[in-house]
Length: 617
Image 1 (cartoon, rainbow, N blue to C red):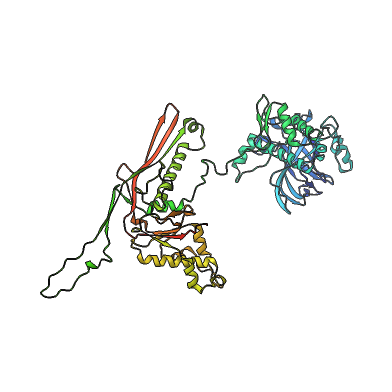
Image 2 (image 1 turned 180 degrees about the vertical axis):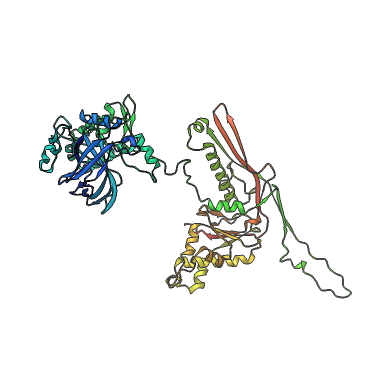
């Protein structure tokens, strides 16, 4: 038989690994007689990492490897390490793994690696892509923890040391991992299921967080990334300056299994406190505060949407519609004049009789209204400390966007509903300067009550409830009210209908006596209402007003063509942004303001649908 430099078990069968998987007999039988590269610590990214080759032999107990070093500087150096006992363990990298019920049935060994002597005495699978489902296909790095055997060129008997008939010779006493004679595997077996899950998660995180720099370069080149781990977390000889040492791990595990602690998380906290480390087991892991270097054991929180925080706002959709559809005027002082001659009999033309004097027509009244502008503003102050410290996004631009949104919402609300503040409030937007459509004079806005009782009688007498649902009754009542009110509407073009989301849903959910939906979409409902578009505004919900005769009316919707509403601002009165730095208070002050007026410019150009509110007696 050919001379080999050393040999050892590449894998062992029927040995349960620390992650619960078991490699079955003949799982790698297709590799029998094959020669695969012998590399250092699973580093595949350069020819200098190839130390030699390994001849694989499938045996009853597993796969045995006869290894030969190349006559290269790397090969000779590795040979010396093996001969001196500095390196005494093998590991394999395998892919095309097939797994069923936590049993590895088949795979292909791609390379054998020399690894530093691990603290784990049994099998260990550093699983990367291996799935847990039936017939899973993946890849893994597998450690056996078995020592290797040296071959000497002048000793032929060494070739037969590891034959199948003498397999017990390769079994050396397992190294003990603590003073009580227990191995780490024995300690882990004492954990309950929850502690085991935490332990495996911690070990997996250690391996995921740190790896060989050369491996990372290779992984970045591979398509889609490659998360294959290139080191054994229990390797005592491989030391990184920023990882937990094996002694640290043993100390934490030993503390966790003691009766006084009984919790892995508590053990982490105690160890951190005793060794001058900050530890937060639910967020940041270990943070170095002393001379020691410790890696993070738990992933840090990450923003789902990096950058500026997401805004939670009121309904903004209708606001942009209002601000885009109102008529923009370069004149801030608006004046309108109308004369109503519809019902003045004295203005009628007359027939002439010979010999009689012609009479003058009667007088008529001119209605004129003027609207003056008012300044509307949003003022804010930003501490410079915050501006400097917040680096994730542009804090100044973020606050400006919020101010602009607030200004637009205030203007749109004042145009449609009114300011809403009490009279006398110094911040109130006067209804004489920006006139609300809802509460405008009856000459400009038709105020119509929803008559539900009339709709019930019209549908089917007094027994309507037995045949029609309330949604159907309300929908029909609203449609009738709107269509009848349109008879007196004098606005231009086709108006839009602004209402609450609930009112829209009431109409869309209307069903007939057979349970069929009456209106299948907003477009179909808009056609029934004879409006161009239905716009929902949650800010309309629950709005009431008191009439001149002390009756309370609840708003249901507003019908208007906003082209009939003029929003005027002279040059210099448009929306302007001012900034100023206050040295005394170290603040960047921001002022966003406009000076404008607003009013309907046509009579009977809007319809307000209201519902009388019964007084609670």
